[in-house]
Image 1 (spheres, rainbow, N blue to C red):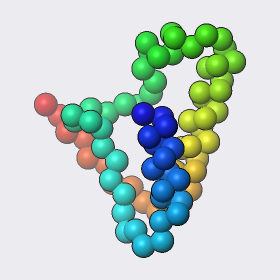
Image 2 (image 1 turned 45 degrees about the vertical axis):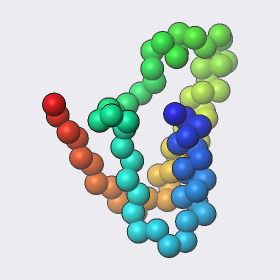
Image 3 (image 1 turned 30 degrees about the vertical axis):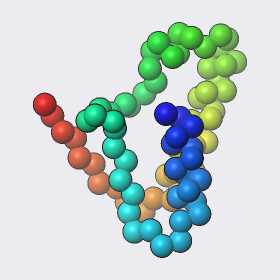
Image 4 (image 1 turned 90 degrees about the vertical axis):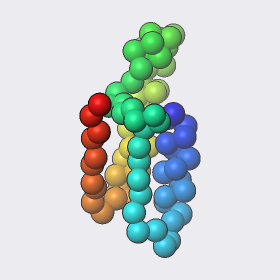
Length: 76
């Protein structure tokens, strides 16, 4: 998921004619953080820091391209 987000951020950085961007979770899901099982699989604190810095960089790049946001939260 993190690599897919980076790919879309890179695509967005090169976008010249777009008017909006829709981000949605698969099968009506939403993630506000990391999968705890994925976190447990990290070998060292340095690995955790690398993942954290990767996502911080990706999200900073993403937010620098946005001019506003709309959020839709669906409940079951």
